[in-house]
Amino acid sequence: MGADGSYKYVVIGGGNAAGYAAWEFVKQGVGKNEVCIVSREEVAPYERPALSKAFLFKDVRLPGFHTCVGGGGERQQPEWYAEHGIDLMLNTEVAKANLTAGTKTIETKDGKSISAENVILATGASPIFLTKLDGADLNGIFYLRENADALKLAEALKANAGKTVVVVGGGYIGMEVGAAAQLMGLKVKLVFPEEHVMPRLFTPALAQYYEKFYQSKGIELLKNGRLCSAFLPDAENKGVRGILVCKDDTKEEISADMVVVGVGARPNTQLVGDQLEMENGGVKVDGNMQSSVPGVYAVGDIASFGVKQFAGKRTRMEHVEHARQSAAQAVKAAMGKSDAEYDYLPFFYSRVFDLSWVFYGDNVGECVVGGSGAPQIFAVWLEGGKVMGAFAESAADDEVKRLKAAAKGFPKAVDEAKLTQLLADKSTPL
Ligand code: FAD
Image 1: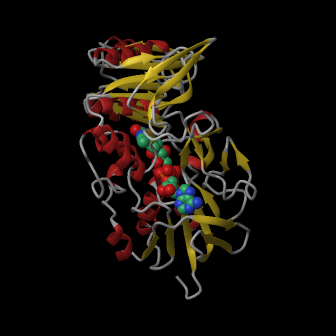
Image 2 (image 1 turned 45 degrees about the vertical axis):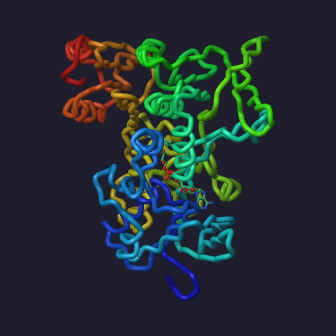
């Protein structure tokens, strides 16, 4: 940093992408005191997916999962940043960013002013809060995004062992928190309006497998049009005693001792929405993660980018692997070392109970499901005679590796023999 608070590179946000950006800066030989990371969280960047998994039911805590342990790198604790000459400003929220083609200026909530030649926006997303519902301010309602949220949630789940939790939302947060809560001894009711769990990825056939599994663990699924429409107050009007659910014209009270809401997330673009070209609710970037303003990059959950292997189809992805890779791409570009455009293979995964699934590609077209179901399942999405996406549950590491290698070529023509073999049992990913 210069005496005037100026840096060559400033990363706004200190989450998953920021941690991998730091790693890439170091790999590319950035100079000491050229990089600053400004984060409103109180802890150094960490692997966010841990928060809804072993953090809850196995008490895994920081520093165990700081970036970049999930991607094969070092566990970067604050000392690591200091050693490499990267300034890590924790507990510091950026209140304003003036992003012009020349020098950019950043103002923090606590009155600091920082200038930068290049800015990497890595502000991630925030949960959708159901603030407009009656009872939204009651105690006992939890959301999950950051380490601080997870600490509070874990404590509440422990305190409510043997009691009931309603989890609102049937996506991956709802499914993972629901599984963790069951493992922690709570009775779980999963409430969501869609016809089945993971509606944005799973087909009904795939979802059925997981729903049966959840039901076998005693988890109640309250779905099909059931919308959480209010939080119910206890006798003292302080704590929550359940939720009110509307389905068509009927209203149903679902009792619980605590509520967890996981109904999606919105990208944190408030700082920049009126200064940069936006797309898909995020910041529009090119193949180097550069926004419409030169020297301003966006990575991770807030970036809207073109997926090269899907003919440039533009999208935003809230997946950890994209956060990691897009951060590396932006750093290389900002340092003038990028030799190719971003070429991300869409990948998503989740782990619940002893199950673990991976997905590569795009879930468009017809989905064909196969596998033994005990517990292996494979599925492929086919469109116009081509494989667009592939899914595997409980695949062995080498099978996942082969699937990943094959997925890199999607879309590609179906090899009927391999497809039959894959769907019949396992082995030979496409
Ligand atoms: P984040 O990691 O969210 O980091 C954003 C950071 O910016 C945060 O530290 C935030 O506090 C900070 N920030 C925001 N605004 C400001 C500001 N104005 N000033 C300063 N700092 C600011 N993905 C998967 O692929 N698989 C999974 O199993 C999986 N599980 C998940 C489980 C949970 C509980 C959550 C919440 C997400 C999960 N994800 C998963 C998604 C994945 O974690 C995200 O895609 C990834 O974290 C995105 O990285 P990011 O750096 O863009 O955002």
